[in-house]
Image (cartoon, rainbow, N blue to C red; front, side):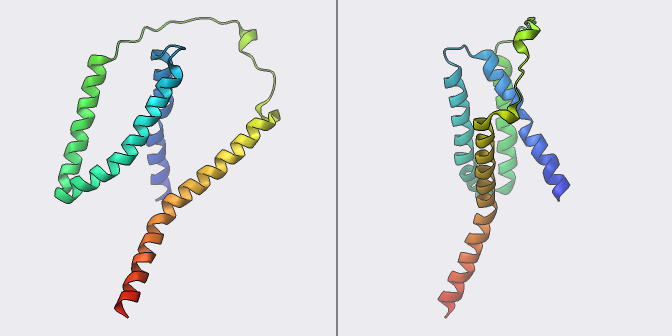
Length: 149
């Protein structure tokens, strides 16, 4: 189970570097922040609406869930091919002395504090995602026991 979860996590998260690179490539300096913000908004809307819509479709017909998912993926691929302009690969050489950073990231205290707090936040967030269904199930069992008395 752990190995399957690890493989699935790698597959699910493998889109993020390419997605960030595409946003950086297709946006200008003036609208780059807006581009990343809209991408994040789209991800959050997908999480918010997708679960409810998936539950609604599964309630109608469980197979409909897979048909709609496949159809929306095909439409997204076609739109990507039709709308997105082809990227021209431009190779540029930068001077190596400008690209080399001499200081270690482990000496940056602000960065280390940020990483610590981001790790704590992620741990709490994922713990909540795991424990909430268990809490709701236990609450439901407790409610049934109390109502039975």
